[in-house]
Length: 202
Image (cartoon, rainbow, N blue to C red; front, side, top):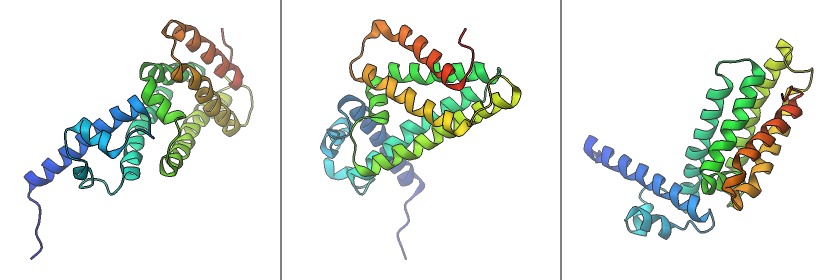
């Protein structure tokens, strides 16, 4: 008869796995993907390096899970804003500001998600999540054109431009932070995004 884990054992393993992901996320935010070794993550979690492999078959698998969790949360927050109250232009403005502000408040992790060199498995996840961001931007732009709040345009192209531009604008500030320039950066970035979609900036 095959051995079956008890509910208590399953709960303990799930808790250990969640702690490992949390520790790995903190390590990635501090040192980036390339330096977030299995040993570094294990040290942060207070376990032996070999114990990591009880939960993940490889460093790449752990890195992918870290990326999915962190990026998934950002997509979720952006979706909540873009599907929230207000007309499409107001939601577009808030979406850009909230996304950028969250990145600037957690610069290490945001840089890892947006631009830090990573192994191919993480790079593939990054591309997938860019598509998710584009889909959210396209939806609100499409709504804006339908309601007449934005001029006629190809919503998919505008969404791709927004996704690329927002990420590119944030890369340098995330890598070389200047806390005093945050509000000015948010104002300028939001205005640029609205111009990209053809919305009034005033």
